[in-house]
Image 1 (cartoon, one colour):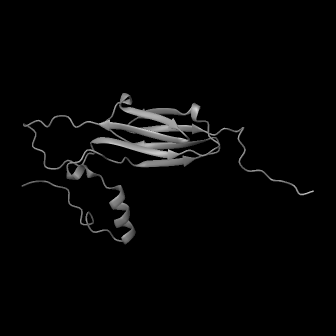
Image 2 (cartoon, one colour):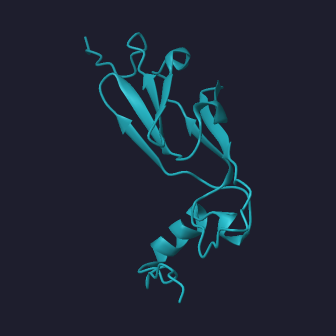
Length: 142
């Protein structure tokens, strides 16, 4: 008897929008490909933006983080270790391969002061806002 996770909703989305979301967010690793898209949370507070990528199983040396023309690009690769013959895999759902995510940075951030840390499978980027760049002003009519 094989133990395989069963999810009745795995291939039947409840709404058309879920189907479209799934189409664009699914990885090709299920079909033997080598590219995946990590899940991302973007948070804004008064002093900064935080971008959190869920990329477990990597080392901090595996990431490449670049800022170019107001775009932040995070890329890397999670390599699949050689499959050992004594292990009898029934299901592999962990995502392997290369990934790249890009984010358009707002004008009021300072790209030179971005801070990155990797802890417990989450890559967290803190992008401080530049208080010198004021985007919103109130103009008094005289």
